[in-house]
Each structure stands twice: as C-alpha cells, then as structure tokens.
Length: 444
Image (cartoon, rainbow, N blue to C red; front, top):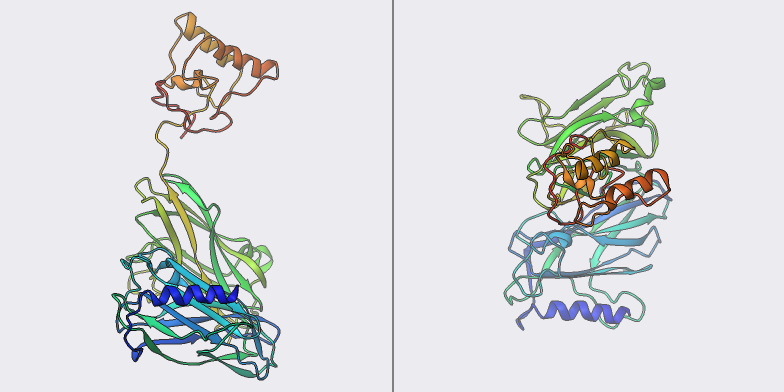
C-alpha cells in the first residue's frame, strides 16, 4: 500500500514536469515552524512551511525525517495545511497525499489542479502540513528535524524527492531547505479556538459562537482579536463565558474590555485581567476548552452562500489612536506561547416564503379548539379569512377542504397525527403549492 501511494504521488507530479534537468533555487524555500514547546511527555505541533516568491507552484513533494539517534520525539499524525486546503482557487488541491511512516518520518505529495488552471500563487509563509509530535526526550533538550530525500516506510522502493514544480511544464526545482529545532522542556502552549454552535446557517438566521482556551498552567490575563467578514456576518453581542464569570469568587475579572466595533474592520476585541492588585494576583481557570466569551452573529440576508470564517487577528484596533490588539496570554512575568484555530460556517440560501405555524388560525402562537372552529366558519359560514391561508391546509395536500379541520380536531382530542410541518415551530412550507401566505404575526 505504501509503494502504491508513493507511486501515485510521483506519477501525479511527473505529469506536470518537463523532461528538463532539475534546478536548485533560493527563490523557493522549505523550513519549519517549531515555535511550540512543552515539557517531556507532552505533545506539540510543528508546521512545514513554504516560501515561493520566485513564482507560482503547480505542485510539491517532500519528506521529513525524524531524528532517531536519541529518540527524543515521535511523529504521530499529520494533516494538510492551509496551502494544500486552499491552493486550488480557494478549494483543496486536486491531489494531496500524506503518508506517516512510524518511527521514520512523513511524506507529502501535492498536485494543485489536474487541468492546470489553478496554481499556488507566489508568496511566503505557506503552511504545507501540520505534524503532531510526542516529546519523549528529557527536558532542556533540543532535537533536530530536517527535510530529506530518503526511502521512508519499511518496504519503500524509491526516495521521495523534495521538489516544487512550477506550472506550464517547467522543470522541477529543488528548494532551499532549512532544518528546525524542537525544544523539549519549554512552557506548554496555550490554544485559543473559536467554534460556531452549528455548522450551517441560512441567510438571515442567527448563530451562536464561543471562544475557548486550552490553558495548561496558571495565567493572569489575555487579549485577542477575532475577525469576521462583514459582508456575510454582523456581530450582535458578546458576553463573558463561564470561565471568566467564575473568577474572583464569581465576581468576574477586575478588568474586562469587549469591543464589538474595532476601527475599520469587522470583529471583536477582548482584553481581560483577572485582578489588578499586584500583591494579590488571582489566576484565570486552568483547563481544556475553558469558555472565555460567547457571541451571537446574524447571517446577513445578502450574505453569499458558501463558507465564511472567524479568524484570530493581531490587527484589530479597539479605538481610534490605539495600537492594534495582540493575541497575548500573560503568565505574569512573560507571555505564553499561543496557537489559534478559527471556525468556519457554511451559509445556505434561505428558503423562500413566509414563516407560519400550521393549524394556528388566529396566529396567537397556540393551537386549540378555537382554530378548527375558525377554519369551519371560514369554509362554510363566511367567516374571516386569515392572512396566511396555508395554516388551514392541515395535511399539506395543497388543498383546503373539510378533512383539514377534522384532522385538526382528531389531533387535539383523539390522539390523531399532528399537522404537517411546520407545526411545532415556525417554518416555511416545504411543499410548493398555490395556497398563499401573505403574513403570519406569530412568526418573526
């Protein structure tokens, strides 16, 4: 299986290459982000990074070898980075294969677009993969990690070459490769994460979100910015989360700034200090998924269907003339190492029509005996006509007839089936029929 996977990777890359010789260039470089540190026995993440100011890239391949002499760390998993997830015109690469070889290293091969329309634009700071690392060596140890041309995974037949491939049939290029150092024994990292309460929301709907922190040790305050796309979302409210509410015996933090309208941007700025007395510092709670703030967003009726995101930002300014608010967690005498993970929401087109509740003739929010009586009066005694005729079509047959009030009476008094949706809650008629619904006061 390993040989087949590697063969697919190499074949996909070769299809983009001309038969010219391989070149080496400093205009392309691969390196590591090893800024996370933690004590022995902990886990961290390192990132394989790519700079390509020399030009666009149609694909890349590389191997990362573990330093096995002292067995100071172990790669346990790897996931695609933002480069592979967005290179194909904002979508994932057409081909993205990652192979984890336990005790040896990791391989990635990427082809951005099989038909060659899209490529990774020239830029810097691209994240190719994110590697989960278990730290095994003693504290106060530095262990190296390197890109390599090596036969990885037992049974492999050919080394994986570290290459980038420009578009248009150009020769592959060997990028400059810089090793990294993994520190064992540093402070464990904190992680700030955002999450929506739902993965999807209709245009015009409201959706909740929260920001939480993974806090492995005591900390005394934090600041952050969380940006959103103002053409898709409107920030309605932000409230302190359960973690902040519990500080100082339930009194909350002594200093808390929440700004919903940063200068020239869409997002929130939050700054918090648990206690301001330097002689009596109280820490914020330790734990995983400690809730810092909750927020409510409105999906704008004009929002574009598709994905929108919440992204942590160092660039949001709370007031004119103030500096941008950094992403910072204070340990007292030094800042913590902080990683962030944003959130995505899929916006769906809102269904057309007026929201109503079937069976509620008088639109008072309840269905009772008065409703079938009113329907019968309308049908046979010249009674008032409701502004939403759909409420009388109890079985959603597309016709209003005698069996509709009978069905409603059966539901109310003879344990019959409930009216068709929407019934328990306000909603849009799922059936496209000719019955009209101009308005319904009991539904927003």
